[in-house]
Image 1: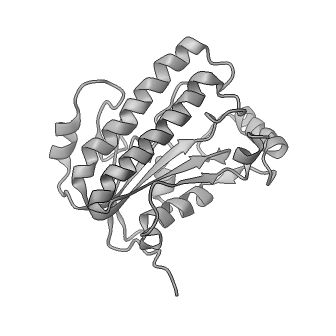
Image 2: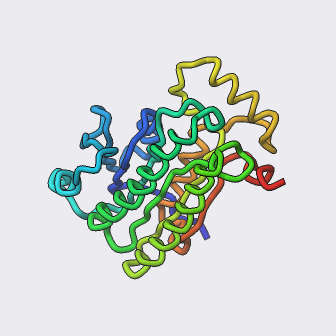
Length: 235
């Protein structure tokens, strides 16, 4: 039986958009309606996400509809010097706020979702043990994992699905630093089972799957889009 991957006529929220989020949005079915929320002026609703000020009423008031079919959370980890070179104190400034933001975004925007809607969280695999994230980042991986499972259980009462994508070495196509992109390619060829960097197409296909009716019986799950990097992290 054919599964329905179509997003035609559906409405989705994209939250916490990084600079490359719109390159993902551009890959979606043009007949799907997308409202983006983030700090960038290019977002439909621009709010200071990383501040503790309550932006809930501001966002809700600006949303013309409270009947969205899904929510995509884009990770907000920013201003890192590197997974290994970033000092411990800097990790402590970054990780807890991101965990709070992850919870707050879902807690705020779940009221705008239809019953049987889908939430997709785009997270990173760098926090996993053995991938150079350090103990603080690894703690974020575990905490975000437990948080997602608890939220999935709560949202299940409304038949809202919640799943996470752990992204590995993905070429976001917006990194201007050629040396950094070369480092990504070299690292992937040495440490990823499939010996290559992933593309935004792979990431987008997974998002579409989780947003569509094809995943209507899947919730509380994690999908690794990383060429097998999470397997080698345990070896």
